[in-house]
Image (tube, rainbow, N blue to C red):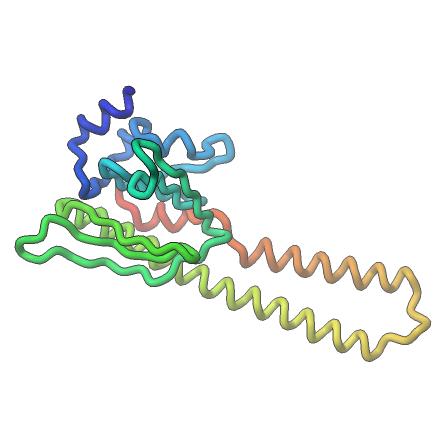
Length: 203
C-alpha cells in the first residue's frame, strides 16, 4: 500500500520517469534485488504499469502491461546469460512528450518510453548499456576462441595418444580440460557490470 502511495507521489504516468536513488526503496523492484549478495540498483525507470530496474547483475522488469488485472509479471535478465544488443536512443521532437531507449536482452526486445525531461539521465544509461554490449560481444568472441583452441589441442593430443595411455594420463588430460573451460567461463562470462554503471551513471 505504501509503495502505491509513493507511486502517486512521484507523479507517474504511462510515460516512464527516472527514479532518483533516494527513492529506490519506494518501488516494488527493490524487493527483488538480491541485496544479500551485493546486488545494487544503478538506474530505475517507472511508469504506472512497468518498472525497469538496471542493477549491476541484471535487468529486472516488473511487467504490468501484459499481466492480467492488476497483477504484474516479474522478469529477470542476468547479464551473464542475456546479451544486450541493438541499443538505441530516440530523442524527442519539438512537440513530443517522451523519448525512447531501445534494446534487446537475449530474445526480448524493449522500447521504453521516458519523459523527455529525463534526457540527460537517459543519455548516461545509453552509454552504460552500449559499453556493456561491447564488452559482452568481445567476451563472447574470446570465449569462442578459448573453446576452439581447446578443441584443436584435444584433436592434436588424440592423434598422438596411443593405446598405452595410462589411466593417470587420461585423468590429467581430463582435469586440464575441465580447468581450462572453467577458467574461460569465469574470465569471459562476466556477471557484474557495476564498474561500468559507476563510470557512466551520474546520479
